[in-house]
Length: 131
Ligand SMILES: [Ca+2]
Ligand SMILES: [Ca+2]
Image (cartoon, rainbow, N blue to C red; front, side, top):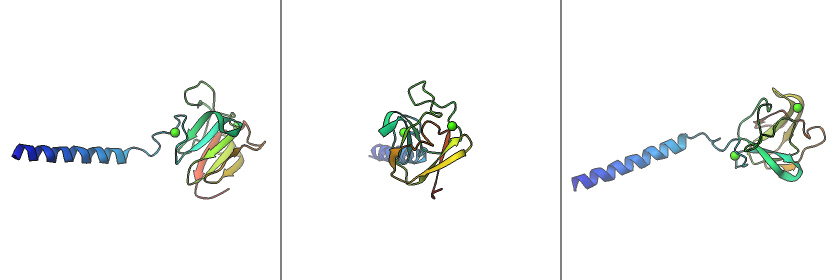
């Protein structure tokens, strides 16, 4: 009886520890895995949210050196459409370090890049406000 109870307490402790570890996992666990999850911003290789997708959960100041997940295709200057699945605004820039032309995409936005941003985006970040 006593052993059984101890075992139950131990099992409850293990469950609690697992719950704490799960809560401590970063929110961006699926960052740059080629799947645009809730809370992420997806930059697609092609128009109409087609082709490879570079999915960001947090800002990235320089896409050079980044590839579309699972490929060797550079994500720099290589995206044509977006899907903002985040609750925040996403800001896109044609140069690294948030420089060059600056565009803003509201939460929930799905669409193709305008001529200015088509195959020119080199950095992106999120914020609670528009441009
Ligand atoms: Ca993802
Ligand atoms: Ca660029």
